[in-house]
Image 1 (cartoon, rainbow, N blue to C red):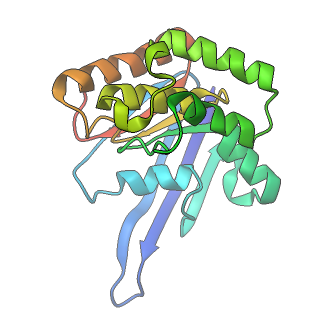
Image 2 (image 1 turned 30 degrees about the horizontal axis):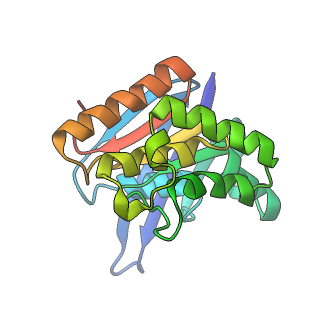
Length: 205
């Protein structure tokens, strides 16, 4: 069953005389429970594609269907719900809030989307155990290694049980050993928990 379907997606920048075609008619389909890796050089439009799916930027043309709904039609509360509950986003540079502990970073999306506190704490406990981050929950990002930061970021991205996890060069800031560990973790999330994962990268281990 298709969870994500992209049809003739385009994103152009500039005017006709100086137009840059970041995406030019891209079509692809992702099945529920699939692990999809998208590889390409810098400037090939990989991040633009994910940002369109995440509704961070608006495409010039085409469709993005998530569970059959064209996300370009979403507005207001529906769009907020999509961003908070339907997708999780894993950033290249972690994007943790430096003034919050690991625990607070993970709980933030749950608070923003009005999850019950008890359920949020239970979800935090489950994710912390699975990702082996119990010992850094009360540390600030500046006190964590790169791998620990990315595990906290993964927990934050998964906190609201998203249908799709989008990973934008999620290991590019990490050393080779930690990169392999994080990629194995993403594959494990996909295989054991059934999370649909879309990864963009320069290389795949």
